[in-house]
Structure formats: C-alpha cells, structure tokens
Image 1 (cartoon, protein in one colour):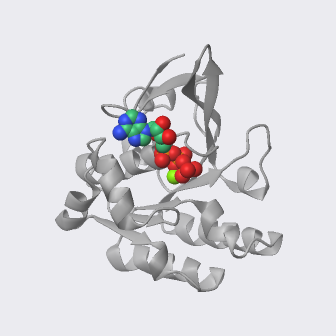
Image 2 (cartoon, protein in one colour):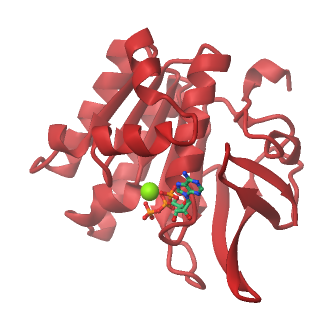
Length: 223
Ligand SMILES: Nc1ncnc2c1ncn2[C@@H]1O[C@H](COP(=O)(O)OP(=O)(O)OP(=O)(O)O)[C@@H](O)[C@H]1O
Ligand SMILES: [Mg+2]
C-alpha cells in the first residue's frame, strides 16, 4: 500500500502505531468515555489533514457549538477558525441539523461533502447524532448509507462514539474498518489517558496501550 493510501494523523506517536496513518476511504471509529480526548484527537486529525496534507474536511460537531469547539481547540494550538478561513475546513454544528430527521441529517452531511469536494468527514459524535433517533433500524441504515456512499467516493470517515467503560460495541463496531479506544485509568492519585487500537483492517497495528498527552499538543507515547 502506498503512503497516499493512508492519511497521517500528524499526532506524534500515533502514526507509528498504525503503519503511517488511517486508510483512505475507510470508516474509522474513535470510542471512549466522556473526557477521554475524542474531540481533541478528532480535531487534531482534521486540522493536521487540512494544514499538512492539503485534504478537505467537513467536521460535524454535535456536542459542542462550532464557536465553543474552536475556542477549546485553539488553546491546544488547533486553530480551526484559521483553517476554515483558509477554505479547506468546514465546521457544521448541531444548529444546522437540529430538529431534522436522521435521514435528512445524513443527506445534509453527504451533500456538504460532495459540494466542498471534501476527502474527510468527521462526525463528533455519532452518539449525539443518534440520540434523538436511536432505534436499531436507524443506526443500521445510517451505517449502511454512510459506509456505502462515502466509501464509494473514497471519503475517509472518522466518527467518535461515547462509550461506557466495560461495555462492548454494537453494529457500529462490526461495520467500521477500524476502532480506536480512549480510556481514563486511575493510577495512584490521578488518572492517565491511554489509547489502544482495537481493530484496524489491513493494518499491522500496535496491540498495546499507549499513554496520551494533550498539552502542549496531543501526543501518544509508550505506556
Ligand atoms: N488545554 C488543555 N490542556 C490539557 N488538557 C486538556 C486541555 N483541554 C482539555 N484537556 C483534557 O482533555 C479532556 C477533554 O477532552 P475532549 O473534550 O476531547 O474529550 P471527549 O472524549 O471529547 O469528551 P466528551 O465525551 O465529553 O465529548 C479534558 O477533560 C481534559 O482532561
Ligand atoms: Mg467530545
């Protein structure tokens, strides 16, 4: 596989765990409990892809408003609004999608991807997007539509999901091409954040836990 078939995350330590990056056109899942860094990882990936790899990215934020997200990420050196102004990133927040059926939300995101000729779609989070319409049928339909439509177009998808520690995965875990897990674990009197790649099709990936640091910028190192 040539390196053009993978998109580096640009996160120190992570690319070395996954043969250089995320496979282009695949559907990647990033799972973790609240506060484990899903939004930071997803934003860092989106920002690095736009600024370092010249990719075009749609970032659909369902948990934080675009403004709140931009403010929080800026503290970590991730200047999403500058990337938006430069034209290769579009942040879509819940307001644009509120009150609509799941199907029209999917269509809106797919249209935005097409219209902007984006190569990457980030959904943060799938859990929040599905909260209003959480029937199993819809999740299945959602996964199918996103998987088929975007994969056919070679669009790389990264979706975050909120996961209760110890709970398994539903259909999303089987459908996704890769699953990365973030966890907070208590050690002595403080918690540490760690990352493990649970699955990544076509990739000889690390099978260990790695330690995650967020500041001054996100990085992953030996556990
Ligand atoms: N500027 C910062 N410096 C250091 N650590 C930070 C900074 N900002 C956030 N963090 C750490 O990252 C955590 C939040 O990360 P993030 O918002 O990405 O989590 P999340 O998994 O998306 O959570 P949620 O499920 O609530 O959306 C904070 O709880 C904090 O521990
Ligand atoms: Mg988040």
